[in-house]
Length: 448
Image 1 (spheres, rainbow, N blue to C red):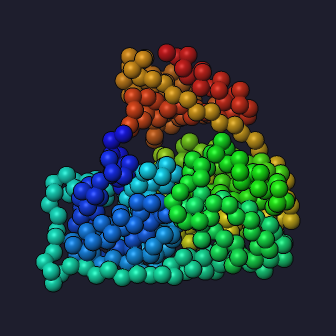
Image 2: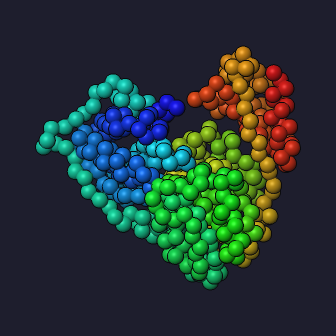
Image 3: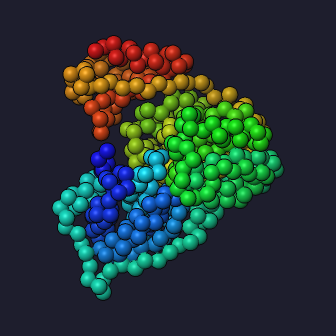
């Protein structure tokens, strides 16, 4: 696996693809692009995190950046740190849901958002050129620490007009937590305490980076938390990925909501408090549209990718947004995916509605997704050729070509996107049943 380089950062297996040399090179490029200034630096709990932090902090200082280290914290906490310190940028050392041997640099700009495509291209160009703005001894940056940023993040969540710990406390909720020994291991239990949750049951909440199961919050990886919810009679279970920007939910019967329904639940809560529109990406479930329309708004769609959703939210002045992978964006707090604010919204919603989590999930329409792919080498065609053929075949349905090709049928949809790393086209489909979703994918494959 080669080093994965994109506008939002770099990712690879530490010691093979992600080496100290390329960590320093990309960090120097980022600091040079910033022209100095202040950078908030945080990391998840991975074993290689401390080594990477030392390299990144020293390199940033060498190109004239003042570094504020915030330790092991969620990715959204670093974003809150950029806002708190009026910083020029932020770096999170985290490979998100990738396995423990991976690590990465996730790069924020001065608005606390992930870098835009144009900003990222400028940074990559500097990295390729090797022209870094290293400073003399009397111009290097400083390195300091902010040790209470996590508490600040939680307090800012509690200040939101629609979050009331007294209502949550009165509901006497019991919550089970699996933080996969990642960056949410301390923050999620602390948030629940501050929200007034009566009982908290935790598994895998030691921030040592030793992930007890595959850290991507998918159903096949979450049997333990489902069992814990049932055995402890918890009202709900919450699961975060290693950097705590994605949130999965388990209902009181031990059944997963499905990550798409994390977004749906928070959309339902926020739009019940604030009139307006929502935004999500093209591959997210149609349930986002249903919930938004129920509250009198419109759900706007963007290309896949957090920054694309954020820009669509800002363009349409959406009051809430996210991605179907369990990423919640509440702009009243900051423009970034945030599992902590997602948890607060879900618990407030449960407490106010006075229903069980299974009853809440049952109140939403059911959709089912299917994911498959087309092997281009076997097909003997180029990706663009395949996408063009699908677009032309369904021209009467006005395909969306913002990000690949998406076809909306009355009963569901098909979204085709070419991979940046493999000779394949990914096919995402959704229908009212698993069979229907798979049938949509087969309908497209039959074209070839």
